Structures are given as structure tokens and as C-alpha cells.
Length: 238
Image 1 (cartoon, rainbow, N blue to C red):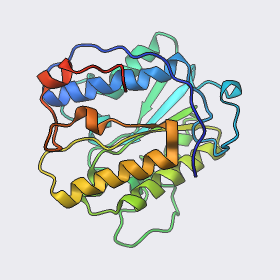
Image 2: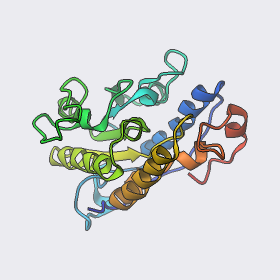
Image 3: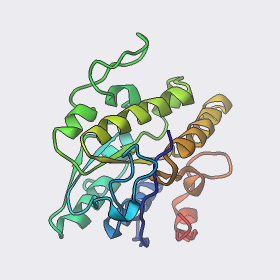
């Protein structure tokens, strides 16, 4: 189901060094945009929701569910995009809880008890939506760039998992923001096609509550762009 519109604001961009560090730091302004005026209409499940009347997700607590990039892998300690977002939010008394873990699949973030194919990794109560909602967040961010595609999970199944997580969050009054897939070196044509389809389906399902990142961070081969090229790009279009 298509989710209603969200208000957004303006982006800023800081310095970064190294390809993976550059990629993770470029995610910070995309998330910080919510501080400037986004609301809980995202994930409410009500396509007729009044965006301007919906409660803001900041000030408040955010919870991040995801895998290695969100966990900060490849960035210096404390310099991952979630840590940097949390640091910027702390000055206004807001908080970010990071439940991301390297290697995580979307099935592991589902509510405990969700029926799954036996071949899928089951929900993990330490890092799933149940754990996140126990922290009473106003916003849940989903950041699962590539692991499902590498594991052979079909795009429709991945997006279905995101939708179930979003619906579960909405039942507790939390908004959901979905970050798209991201580039990854060494993927084959089938895996790249799965990422394309995942983003296409997620954009249709989540609308303005879906943030497209992969094209902006990719090189011509679909891998991770160099840090120099990334920093030379314009980012006001994201």
C-alpha cells in the first residue's frame, strides 16, 4: 500500500575520507532532513492523512534497523552515518538507538512469530522491530542495502518484509523511513537486477517515505563510486 507524503527540509554536507567512509557520511544529511520538519504520516498507513497535522518525529527517539553500513562498518569509530546523525541530534535532546548489525537480512528484523519460508533466517528479537518498538521511537529507519539480494531473496519478498515492519511500527504510532539499496562491488547481473527491482517496488510502496540512494552513490558498473567522485557531485537533488 502506498504511504502518504512527508515534509522535508534542506540538506547539508560535510567532509569525509575513504570510499566507505564517504558513502556512510553522505547518508547523514539525508537523514538529518527529517529534523527540519518531517512527520509521522510516513508509515501511518492512512493515504488520506493530513501531512501538516501529523506529529513531528523530532524531537523524539529514532530507532535504526539495518545491516553493515548502518552499523558503521568501514567507517572510523563513531563516524558511521547513524553515529553522526545521533551526534547532531543530541544537541537538541533527541536520541538515536542503533540496532543495526553487519550481515543482517530483512527477515531477521520482522516481528517474532512472522510465518516464513524455513530457508529464511528467523526474526532476531535482539535486532528486530519488536526490540525497536520497545524503545518507543517516533521514527523507525530501515537500512538494508544489499544482503537480501546477495542471499537470493526476491525483491518482492524484501519489500514485503519492509511493509510488514512499517505496518507494525504504525500500529505503535511510529513512522517509517526506508533507505534504498546501495551499490556493492562484485555483484553479478542477477543480483544487480534484484537491487533494481527492490528499489522500484519500494518506491511504489513507500512513496516519499522512500529515499533513493543507489544511483547517487554508484559508479558506471553498479559498484561503489570513488570518494573523490562522490564528493564532486551535487547533492541538493536527493
